Image 1: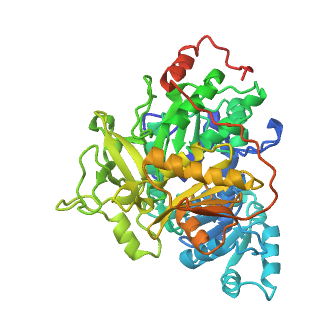
Image 2: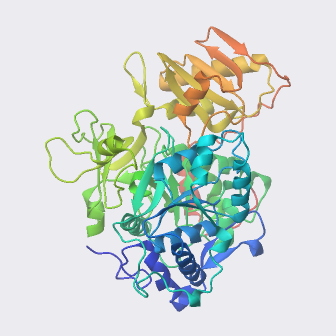
Length: 607
């Protein structure tokens, strides 16, 4: 199997952690920033870690951890995102520990904010918890209160608490890594180094143990698919400062959720005269989180092509927690003649045999399978997406039945490899065999006439008819009994009753017109009531539960167009100016901008 021996910066390594000492000893890398934590401060305030600093810090952290823990112990990491979290995860891997990173709930554990922490502690059974000393002190203070949850208190009291500020106090020169001296004693390729949780978009989050070797394979595949090299600059950050950071650091690669593109267009500041944006360095604009709507991508390109964004940088991709992160991408070097599409969507992968270029890629098999017969469907027929890859995890921790069902899918009457059943639906179209991820099996809405529709089509049609009133990405469609319901967040709730009624009627009419589906219940709710995952995905199952349990702040609901109920507040009329960016002649517009890329200045202020 060919890996990376052709590149001296990426020598073949079985686990990702082993790259750190290699890079730390290369003169070109030693003082180069490996990670930069960007925030709202000025560029001189951005904290960073060089490769040399990271390798040294990881060495100290791993040795310190092994002074009180032993290899294969599980540790819950209660640290907010940042450089310290990066150091600790690498430090745990080098110590041979299993890390479970989660966003720490407020240490008061009020407002029922601790349920995920209880889930993690019960399912992963950690020996220790790593957190900042001030957080630990506040947790212990909170646990002394008699009003605290008794089950949570018992779980937390049984942990060995390790303060982050004590992990790096030792002098690296005084430490020897592990009992074996110079021999690497961290996580081996077949050992679990991390437990990550599924997003919770379709059900309660489940723990997925990730082997160190699977993660290394996933990194190699992603790097080759996107032509990442030693000088690639990757950024992941909030949309509000995202464009600024791409410009400032000349970023070449960045992931962005598909649902964030319209928000960046709307809130990115371009229409306010900001002229310092330069996106010409971008080589891979990785579009993640299905569905990927073609119109949103094209609108984004039309808005930002004058700022140097090349259409060839667009890289729709597919991934899931059960396969580490990355599965595949639709194309490698852009699509110069306009994007292929199916039912308003862009493809997320490509299944053509000619696409595989080396042994490692041939180990990855993506199929679309009939869920009942467990046989591959013909191209053009929608089915469940199955993935077989060395990046696949082994299953869900503590869920044997779900593991058997989800991680050991086998085709009917065919021996051989097993597949992860992703729960995603997809269809393969065209000679190039592009894979379009159409939605989730568990979210499908079935009408009384037997029609099947993915809820995101209903939500998109509803939003598009009133984008000046509704919050983007904050609509959820689902079935309650025989009724199709739609819950939508309002941008503001101080509206005239007549406007709200008209809005509900327009939503029902537009969805019926566009998708041929009748909405039996439209519910308008206040800002923040539609549940989302930490990554911004709509939790339709949770929205349904909240609605049925009366946990939503309803402004108005309209049932079957017959009557409506209004929850009054104040009633000033809100601005109804349409802020949608409707793009006509999308292909011509994008190609026009692209064709002038060489003659246009990279920084423009006329938008």
